[in-house]
Image (cartoon, rainbow, N blue to C red; front, side):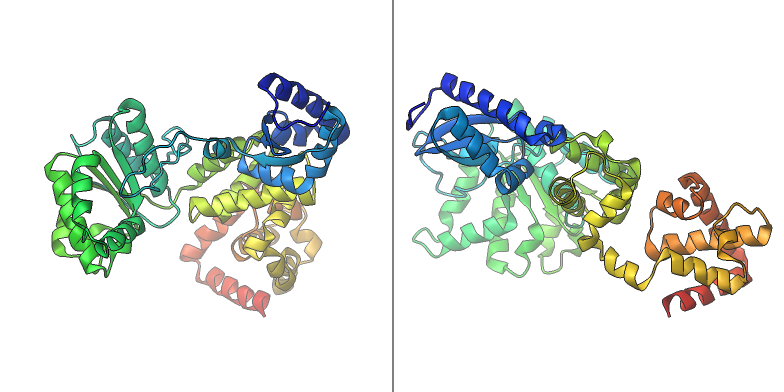
Length: 457
């Protein structure tokens, strides 16, 4: 095939079918092929570069880093000439294709709504149920019910996702509605830019009056200490609210705790509906992980339940931590230690850089804890890890499991393997027995305190 600058759709599709057939044969790894390659397609050929759309950002990283040369060789064999390969996502296609010239708005020209953040992709649970429901109500009838809607909570818990979900839902049902979604920092930057210009900021007020029907602003706490900007924001807020236009605000604190904000703003913030997003509960974390695994083109059934439990327990502070751990785990099992099945040992290896688990294991190990308890009670180690039901031995075993769990944060199933393959329910029951004893048994509390000192010495 002679080298050309462009190909039509039929030629691109025919070329890519042949490339995929060759890659599948050479790769000899069905999991990688199905997860990251099978649904890829050639989007266009420009300046001797073939742009290939992959199913996710993770796929783009993996294919570009590890398989680029294989693809270039396959394309060369199929096309008869050499092309550079550039992996992109569908979003990159939209952003890179030529657009008709459209006049940029005078204000907030770079404001964007993320199409991936919808109510369908938001994982609801006990920790965020009220905030999600309040957001849904507002999106269905903006400006008519709760105005403003104020959502607060720590960073990384899904507040930004809900803002974009509201915006996407409104745009889908009311395409003519003028929706503006920005951060508080965007507001500060825009205000300062036009305050120092000829307009002295007056045009900003007019923009909101004429060009905004729904105003969503993220991280309002970033206005703290910016008196002039807060005065402008109050004018904008009042103008929109008085006109019955919907306002949605997020913050890391309840309005009453926004130190540095004028009382008149705090009062306005709580006139509508104020809802909290809390740290996700374990079940919500698990569901988030499963959904994100699927979103990366992987099969969640290939991840042991214990892996899901471990990640949900260890990285439960916020959703961003969960995403970071999952991305590292996927990268590790694809590039460092390829496997079709992800068990707890692989998972702990993969995320060790996030948990400092390897360093912990050098200082402290399950074996050290078992040996310390065995020595303390003068019981042979093999009896503690064995099946003896003698009361004293069984209690020493329960204490070992308790200390391993709460000192090393070891998953229940992994603890069970150290004690003759006991299942996680048995381990959990053993730990609960110790916890119950600690509530009323002073001798048990003293023993645990002494054991902890010996273990950490």
